[in-house]
Length: 338
Ligand SMILES: [Ca+2]
Ligand SMILES: [Ca+2]
Image (tube, rainbow, N blue to C red; front, side, top):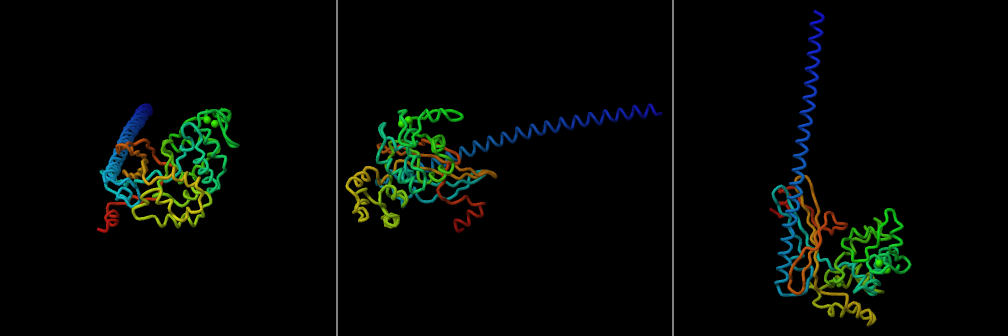
């Protein structure tokens, strides 16, 4: 009797053990399947987000193409492409693009022109750094990062000798920046500097050294014109004509510039423009429970108006103010006043 109950006990234990192993196995299989499904869903979401971003780019390009077709060469904030775009629903989510002029900030790559230091641009950058209470040496180290030689420039310069002594060691790029993020590698550009500087500068090809006066902010105008009082800069930009200044000469005709030397006036004439060749597209993409911000840089070639995306980034260092995506379709209708 005892023996039989012992046997029964062992059999029960074995069965329990088998059941436990089977359960574990099933759990593992279910977990693995769930993971595969999550990965697939994640991948599909990625693909979908990329697809929606491509859609926003096409939308922006259509707006820029229409702008080029209207025959005027002046680009200003009153034009159709520069107006806020509505948020629009897409399968599984909603997107909102915002198209901005990219030539109203200081192009960091303009510090080097034709292989040499661009003295005018350097002076503007130094004034901008001073305005932002950032160390002046940041201009020197950036010149060295961009210039092709290996001679340190100025007091804060840094070439291979400096970077090879870092942990881990690397070399100076000795060519134009390709992204704003690359600046992190340059001597002195820590995260505080990067955050402070981001709203004021842009990374465009070195040839795009002109600044569109019709999108200019008072802060950059101050950096462009030595001795210009902040209040005078604000006042001048408040008087921007509705259709923008038609020419750089019309802009410089303003009495504010009366006291400016002919040398500075000539420099401004060379540095300013009333049209833009580069545009930034910021797109908020809500898909499922995620929200993404995509950035694309679009070039418009002057000779034929051809448009080209020359850079893309997810979560750029700086995002201009623009409307959020409404929480739901109902909110969207409210926004539209339905
Ligand atoms: Ca160099
Ligand atoms: Ca150098």
